[in-house]
Image 1 (tube, rainbow, N blue to C red):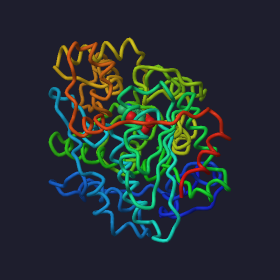
Image 2 (image 1 turned 30 degrees about the horizontal axis):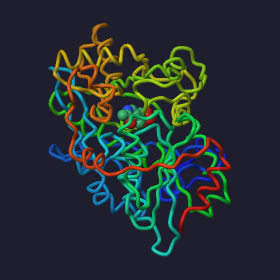
Image 3 (image 1 turned 135 degrees about the vertical axis):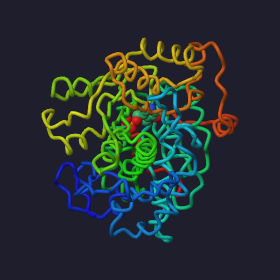
Amino acid sequence: MNYLSTRGRAPAVDIDHALAAGLAPDGGLYVPQVVPRLDAADFAADEELAAVAARVLHPFFAGSRLQSQLPAICAEAYAFPASLRALDGSTHLLELFHGPTAAFKDYAARFLAASLGRLRDAEAPVSTVLVATSGDTGAAVAAAFHRRPGFRVVVLYPDGRVSPRQAHQLGSFGDNVHALRVAGAFDDCQALVKRALIDADLRQACALTSANSISLGRWLPQMAYYAASALACARQQAAPLNYVIPTGNLGNALACVLARLVGLPIGDIVLATNANRVLPAYFASGSYAPAASIATLANAMDVGDPSNFERLRWLYPTRADLPGWLAADAVDDVDIAATIERTWRERSLAVCPHTATALCVLARLRARGEARACAAVATAHAAKFDSIVEPLIGQPVAVPPALAAMLARPAHAEPIANDYAALRARLLALPA
Ligand SMILES: *Cc1c(COP(=O)(O)O)cnc(C)c1O
């Protein structure tokens, strides 16, 4: 299996190369040359998440020295459940927050770390995993690579634009993890990382690699929990499962799209954004107008120019090519807050602001008569966003043990200007 760049000006590479590189040398994103097909009947009825993951990813690793190691890699990465919680007969919550940093990004970050760890040459210099985060990616990547020999992690996050608990988490690792708080927005952090990754001299000097959602090693493994939940639903109800997915950089939702194209029993896919409505606007008008991101209650989705949009365009070049089963809708802060409050009142369930965007969009669909089986994707635990959720529900949210342990550690992050030269100098000064 070969991978091409969305920009078409880089040579085709195998997946081992694409994983190590992150971004293609022409600045594009790697995509599979062909989408492999699987049959739902290939999956055994009682397969665990890790086994489903290995089976879904197998054809994508054809020719890779990692292919035979997928069962072990997946056992490491998918070591906690992705529970499909029934809220009522046809509505489910796909809970993806049971990992160490309490957000869905744990799965793919751990997959990437387990893969890069196995691809690494024992004699190679220490690799620097450079990552921009709107809050959750950085912690997941840092947790996945923390104390892993041969790697260090540099996390850039927008100072003052992540939740207090997210900031604490990012600064709590120490050891081989460096947290830099940037005087800017998430899009600035992302632009700095993209620039560093195409700076050939710096790349060489620091053995840079990326772990943002543009990396294939983040994108592909996210198919696993869609595959597992869709197969479980198809088995119980003999019908495909429809998904509403909180969306920012469009990595997680495009993994669901890929899982559908592979042949899994997935129905409609609806992207739920916050007030950064560049994707719903594109779906409505056909013109893509990236904008500066605006701060919302669902901060991990404060993205004005989704980095995976190039992959959507590669799949469907214009609006006319978009399939009927794919849609997008935006939820502003008023509706996010109202949904958190209502979900608590009606279901005694505390949800994070990102999850609330999906629940709000799903409620709109139900009001218009949608009666089929639908899953709203719960992308983070409410306790990560206690400062938003607790005042709305009037109760403390219980903190999961892994998150509590991280919050109990001291935290430190270095301030840095929103300036490429400053970042470059900082990276070159990292200890060997
Ligand atoms: C990252 C994140 C999202 C957005 O996912 P994308 O893959 O960037 O679209 C949604 N919710 C939470 C909690 C996140 O951390």
